[in-house]
Image 1 (cartoon, rainbow, N blue to C red):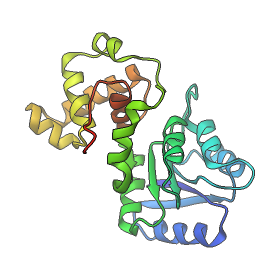
Image 2: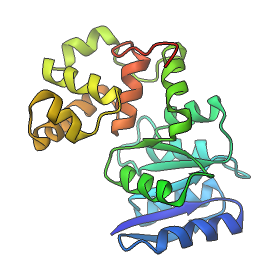
Image 3: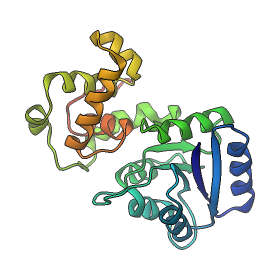
Image 4: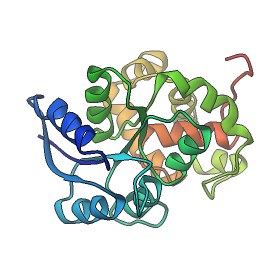
Length: 223
């Protein structure tokens, strides 16, 4: 069972998200919060698999709360899926730099939200399809958020890990990576599990963003 905390300052939104997720047989909303402070308290106390976090809330906002739950230096992180009505670059990058495993617009279809929760709970992460390409185009111009540079990546990662990272940055699933490299899916998962700590990331999404941000992967301006 995937345990979820829903944090949003609007009661109707909290109720709607809770109802949407609770009907799924493998998802249970175990708590709700109306601001970032309540979200952090509930997450630390209940240890959910995912926190669905609104960005703009009174008091402590979602990005600050996300940083407390899964940002750099947090030894026992709680995965966060950021939900917002605002498609603004600074929000996207702020959420990712704070350690979020996913970013989704609230107008996404219900099945997309449910899939995102499952993806984040499984450690894969997710990024709204409507902004993915723009994020990957512009991420190379943003400041680096990880301490490892592209030059050091070649020293830290094995050749096979680099192969997997590049395909991960292309948006391939574990199954697609396995097929492309003639590996077992379990082998791909093992490589990912060893690779992500080396990069200082906690999800597939953060690994892909890291690859573009540090010049390991490249994306054309026309993508």
